[in-house]
Image (cartoon, rainbow, N blue to C red):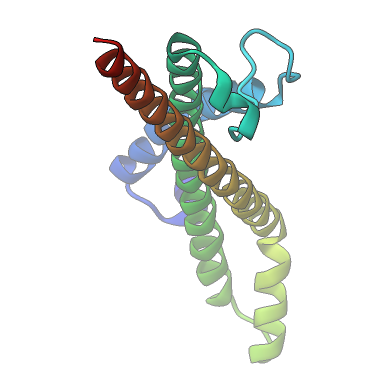
Amino acid sequence: IKNEMMMTEEQIDILEQIETYIKPQLENLVKLFMLPRDHPQSCYIQIPTSSDSELSVSELANFVARTSNNYALASRLAGAAKAVEKRAEGLYKLKYKKNLSLPAKNADERESKAYQAVEKEYQDYIAAASLVELANSMESAARIASESARKLLDKAYGSQQGESRSTS
């Protein structure tokens, strides 16, 4: 990478550290989100329904915990995906600019050769950007589910408190 991209050893080291840190996390998070709904470790994002309002306070507390954990995982996935996208974008742009400076007959040929040289990096960048979109939508759904579950729990707890006051 160093000769092709003209990066310092320190920059290469930082990029490698980031990749070493993010790649396994991203793989694990994607695996968790790909588990079937009925799997015990499934991160399936379930938006509360009207029937959930009939759950007991302890069942709702469990539901809040699950949705909060899913939100945390979705946020981590979104953050890791954004980091991968930024890295892919940087590598693509850096290599493209480097290839633009190579000799050619004219500007159109130079640009054409530069695009051909960065085809893989561009595909990696597009794939990373797509993952970011998916992760952001999962994060939004998980946030809504978590907030809705919390509101249901608050209402149930308030109702339970009101009932205990009226019986005293």
